[in-house]
Image (spheres, rainbow, N blue to C red):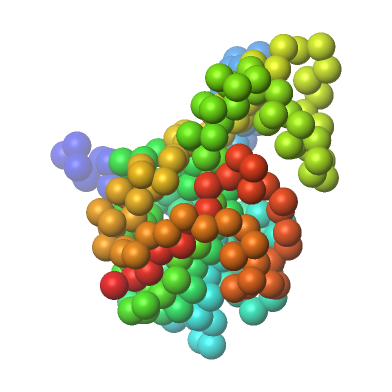
Amino acid sequence: MKGLLTSALGRACHSRIGATCATAVVRVTQYRIFSPRTTRMMEFDLMRLRARIHQERYSDRQIADVERLHFGCGNRQVPGWLNVDVAGSQCDVDLASGHLPWADKQFAAIVAQHVIEHLELESELLPLLAELYRVAKQGCEVWLSCPDLERVCDSYTANKGRGLIEDRLTRPHGDLGMDGIPSQHMINNVFQQSGEHRNLFDFELLSWALVRSGFTDNRRVDESQFLARFPEFPKRADDRYTLYVRSLAA
């Protein structure tokens, strides 16, 4: 009985009416019922729900003539790639759902920039990497970047995070409004980002996750190597505190 009830509730929620009702509930909670941070997280979960509903439309459908996957694209949609995110993309997908809606061995190249740190390691990232391995052709290149745990910790011991702030200020929209706040808080910002970040990675930890998922030949690279391979991507100029890793599907 419990299983049937859970299944029925799941089907109800994964409908347009269910999503609309859930959205209305979250809108009401903004009025002093939950904190702004909790409300933002619930709103994001609603985007994930809508993506799962849309995902049913093209589940297991092969995307013709597209062999390059750019997931977690945000507003950086790159020509010649299938640009995927939870909302507002060419193909809205809940990357944390444990299922990708494409055929086996679909892609010859996969890229994600500053995405994986938003996923729980065991319940979300490892299932996603396993799915990426499934949809990757043999020899598929996987290029990932994220905040570098080792460099962030080094920044604290070296200068209490001032290097992180200086680095951010060199980039567009890098001012986080920290005037008057001690630089140590920048370390908190990188680790938490208002509750959006779940894990940071160093090369060893990310390599472990990739190998566990079937990928091989993990190499630490930098942004210049990435852009030399895929010059169509916009430059981020974030090498100073970013981990870049290139891996291959066996």
